[in-house]
Amino acid sequence: MSDEQSEDDFQEIGVDLDISSHPVYNDPNDKIVIISNDYIKFRASKFHLMRTSQFFDGLLSTVESEEPTKEEPIHLDFPSSTISLFLDLSTCSNPSIPTINSEEAKTLLDFLEYAICDDLIDIGRSSLRNSLENQPFELLVTASRRNDLEMAKHALRKIDNKVYNEYFKSAFTEVEVKQYLRRLTRPYHLALVDAAMTTIEGSFGFQLPHLTFIDDWSTFADSFHPDQFT
Image (cartoon, rainbow, N blue to C red):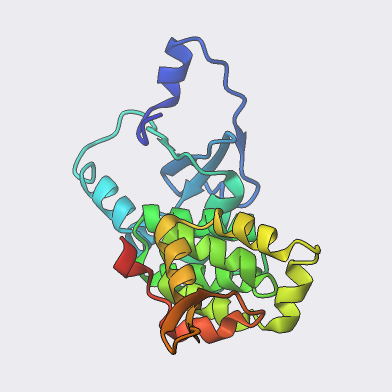
């Protein structure tokens, strides 16, 4: 679906849309219409959209001099909950994000990056990190998939022996660890293995490499460098 595809296009191909208006973002004085992927219609301030987002600034600047003959809604492949949060952030002078779950935080950050909202991306990252603050193993997976080294190191520093033993509860810890590592992207997987590599004294005094995953991963944070495996 194109970002600028109009509602008429759907009607032409026989798709019956049941579009509802957002209860708050429905001011008739706001001429920019956005439709979410769950078919909620928003009316938004052109000024705030262009002020907040390079994407909207570029999109709306191209049609600024034209005289529109009808509303051309902007269709975005994001849910209404995400667009509503974005509009909340775009219309206040001191933006902050309420407590939301990790999936909502991931989608919001995806949107802020998609829309190139430079002044809001760090707020979105903090929201995502806070949503998984008590789940550092899941935060590490998220960081790996986003290639966010700062977030990954923050997650590692939270994994002490108590957190480790609460997460890996079975008698087959090594199997669980291997299964967990497969959830990480390849560079993060290899970086974690590399950080865990230690040496042991061989029978003839040789230093032999030894792979050990101790139950305190916070010690890996400073030596964690996934960029060397990309």
